[in-house]
Image 1 (cartoon, rainbow, N blue to C red):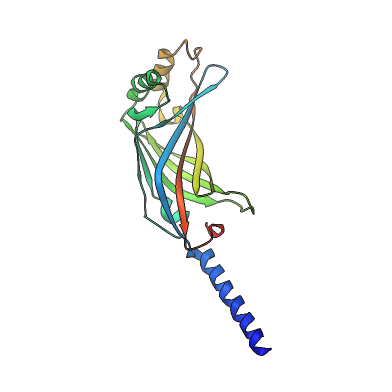
Image 2 (tube, rainbow, N blue to C red):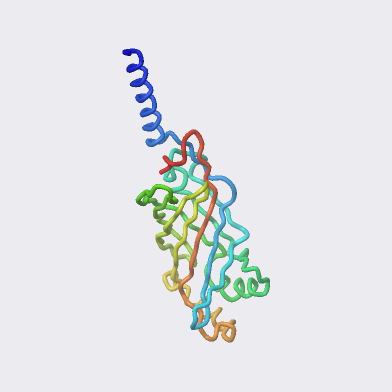
Length: 210
């Protein structure tokens, strides 16, 4: 009987040790695959959304792998070539480049993840939280909150920017004038932005990922 009790205690101790190891960083996480950047702008008084992506996105990771999201993502940067805008309409893309992006300083947008805060965990639901991202556009850098969710190996974050915060009123007036009839005289200054990427977890159960 004593041997059985000792055996059970040993099993519970080892199980607890493994659990603690995973919870305190026993996982190995790594970003994998490309990073996709999305956007959605709005036109007409009815605020109709027009969205797309960028074909040229360079992601530079702060670390190849780590124990949690903070170690592999905070400090990572994305460099976007604005001439690679893709709205699935070649004519529209040419208009966006000529009458919007070329009206601003520089031909790139740079985003850097500078912070992360995990949200409350709920069993059976995606892990959530908040990224803090520095976005540099038109020579101006602004800090933007981007709520994220992580589910089935995919990290997805979304947020909003206001073009006036980046002193891009000239570019906004330019695209509104070029598309005045199509936009019914109204091009909105707020733009939805987002990014997604794959994150693989090894050496532990994904339930321990922070």
